[in-house]
Image (cartoon, rainbow, N blue to C red):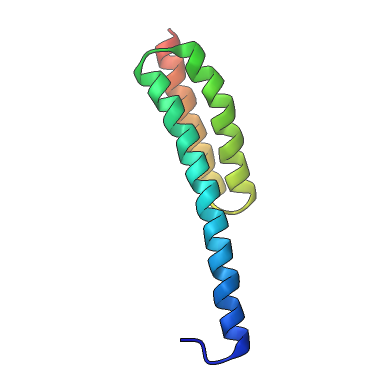
Length: 88
């Protein structure tokens, strides 16, 4: 338990940031899931449409330091590789 007013405030600030980060991360994961679903159904057009949304959400998470830049790049590369494989 916090002993000072400052520590109490930090607990609140950290909780708000955690909730904000959690929402962005969840949004990103949902967008990735929609791309993976389209890939699983072998629907290249739907996958490409969903990819633009997913890339945007991944970039937003990277900008906000919720995930590391390399992690974001790896996620985008993986999705694009999978789409290119089903587009053949």
